[in-house]
Image (tube, protein in one colour):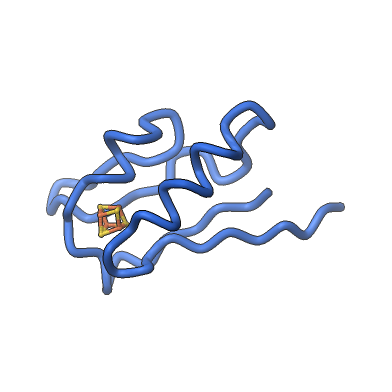
Length: 66
Ligand code: SF4
């Protein structure tokens, strides 16, 4: 899994940061920041949930491996 996020559309709702603090953080402006773009398996479900829950669809997941 590879995780990315679009700061330009992030509404600074912080839902992803509360949901998966191991993967998402906020920069000084409050915009989403991915701190672990390749999270371990045990976090994948939480990351997918965060992506679905993002009100602005700013979280992107790619499942490409290798
Ligand atoms: S849930 Fe979406 S809008 Fe909210 S902080 Fe995360 S990326 Fe930004």
